[in-house]
Length: 115
Image (cartoon, rainbow, N blue to C red; front, top):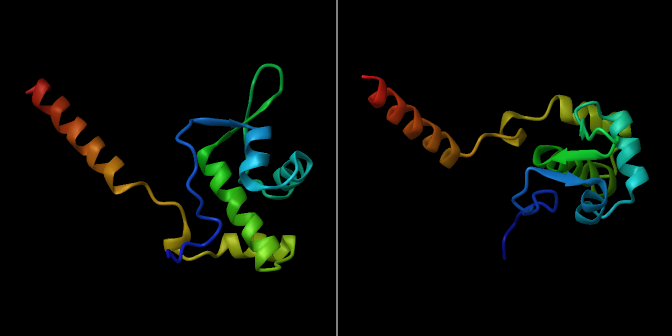
């Protein structure tokens, strides 16, 4: 059995998530997401021309982390804000090694084309 924290949930591979999808993934009502958005400035979903929120994967990951801090660790909103501000580097979201390798290979191909 894995020892993965509950906030490190496997998310669908999508660019954007609608508020209803995020609500279902995280397990909190949409009004809670809107409240957290007002409290945690790092949650900043894009808006469609009609005003609908579109959350990025990193937004959803942050929301899962916030839920973990508030519901499981019993942090206050202020405590969660402080914790997120001073979180050690290994807890912060890092680019995937595979992604970096793909970018590196693509840049080498471009360089080879130019020379």
